[in-house]
Length: 131
Image (cartoon, rainbow, N blue to C red; front, side, top):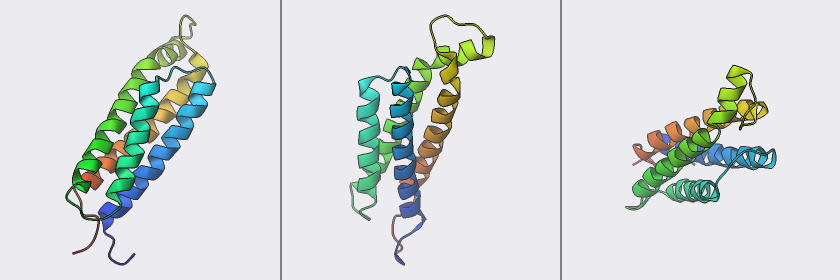
C-alpha cells in the first residue's frame, strides 16, 4: 500500500460511491421511482471501469477512468431528468404525474452521484501509483 498514490484512493472512493448510488437506485426503484434499465447497465459499467483503474498504471486504465466518469454522468442526468417531476411537485405542493415523496431521494441520488463524478474525474488525471 506504500506505492499507492492519491489517484488510487480517489478511484477507490469512486467505486464505493458508485456502489452506494446503485443501492440508492434499487431502493428508489422499489419505491416507485422511474429508473431505466440502461441506467443500471451504465452504473455497472462505471463500477467495473473504476475497479479496472485500480489495477495500476497500465496504458488502458486512463481510458477506463474516463469511461467510468462518462457513465456516471449519464446515470446522473438520466435519473435527474426522469425524477424532475418528483422535485417539481414537491416544490409546488401539487400532485400530478410524479411522486413528490421521492424528491428527497432524488436530491440524495444527485448528491452522491455528483460526488462520484467529481472523484472519477480527479482520479482520471492523477497517477494510481507512486513512481
